[in-house]
Length: 421
Image (cartoon, rainbow, N blue to C red):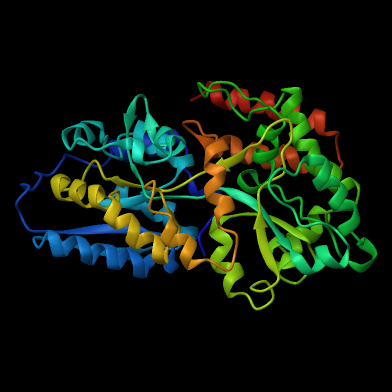
């Protein structure tokens, strides 16, 4: 299953990574561009391994001196194993990177800046969504070529909507429409709710924060936006759903994840992403009952966009060969292969194959969302304040403190953490 962005224990403190890199020892001589090489390519999604291996084989066909070994490490261990590999001077030559980690790895010299190579190869970064290029740009330099992207929408159960006499969500629906539908779709006495108000940024509260006109972090990455009244309204969207019993409480969603509740007909809607097409397409309950719609519009329309990038280890013995592979992975031919069997490819104009492969759902919702998408909010050490988000927002979602109080305390704590970056 393709993953939404998660950080948690996956991201180490900046200082730890800095020490780690400093302890890697002297650089080894690098190989010439014409030397034979076997590149290691680290990924975390087992479902994408076949298409990654297909891409590696296609690359080797045109570059017979270079072979690629796709190395799978499950998400739960990916960042820990990568840190250990960096410590031992054995980082993979090429590996997947996500938004919350890229600045940390770039700032500590773990990954290679690609700006000069992009310029030399005359690559047009305009073929990728600007939000992704910006996400992987640090201090004016690009560090990864976008591989894929995802946006967020509302997955809804057509049967439950029809049974409640509620019109299916469609483009142009608003927060008021969503709240009216939520009231009709909820029957807590029968254990049925409109939606699960889970504490997760990418699929849930980041979207409503930007729809409300607020922000998570300032554009320069130095100030929290959680004390902005508009941001607080974006959080209240979710706490009100729990208060009004239109969402299960946090304990229920801890015991049974919202996606499991949705797949058993207990939730009428599920805020999820384009990455859910495989899950819902294979699930016996959802594959004929659900479809996708755009997120409702608040003060404005917004959805969070994120995507992975391929990066090159700064310590690779084969910098020329690794760059050639990353350049290929970022190309149109590679994107066309990826779209048939993987997530939405980042290369503009290659998404039709993904749509065709997932035609049972209204996948165009996720492509159209790019036009109003907001980049996933990050800073140098995103994980530090992600942990604080969960800690403080739990108090608001459980009703322990008012949402305003939790948000302002979160802003205070987050600003203190940002000041240390």
